[in-house]
Length: 352
Image 1: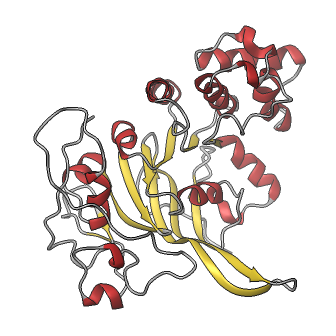
Image 2 (image 1 turned 30 degrees about the horizontal axis):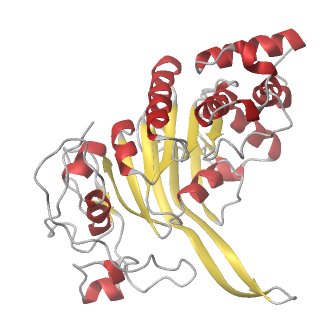
């Protein structure tokens, strides 16, 4: 008899171990296999109950693929993902769930998509859009019950319930994203995957949506996996941050620690590009040069070494392990760099 899976960290709601998602590259009418795109390559992280965990990196680094794999919108190649559905039975391995159990999981784990324009069906009105999850999961007893729950969801995100008869074209980008958030919340989930939830919005609207998400977290006890490429946004919203590069996590730490004392050269380069809200003396930092590595043909050794000004011969030959370098009495600080304990990298004060 197999033992029940268990978390290795206390107070955890999600724990991902050695997650891989590889896409085959085919050629010709016979679809001959000629290569593999390593979109997510041996990624491990955990999310504590009630926190906001940020996943950041350049476009194409595997952030969105990671999020969609956790919901099984994309099937993983390998790895485990333990999730606590709050039923008292302990965590379940998402990647081993059958379809009925997967449907149950998706009541507790919901997603907010990047583009509020393409993620809403223009042929459905707001009542149908927000009420659809309730219908699929059979959570309403009558039409009035459905409308009452849709009205409650609209009130929660700051929209007038009278809007439920309107169609998506009648709303601004910020209002559409509020509708997307209401749709994600209507089933009372425990965990929200927010995939670039504010990147398509104007800066002023971004602040409104982030404030709304923070308020909802406090009111409803939500946990977020917040996927983004804008470190200025992540800085204000996330408790901990994981930095991805070409499908791999290269650094993971508490937000203040990561900003003040980065231990990976890629994190240092990302932080150097973040505009500061407070004026001060200019700091000269060398811009990051070169192109992002091809996940179908990654370089040997450390994937970042062709762009790293600190790279040595070992970086070209040997892949660094993703290990915790923090002292025993300090919060974990994981990094994948051969010289993490030797480099003096420039950080910034967390502007939260």
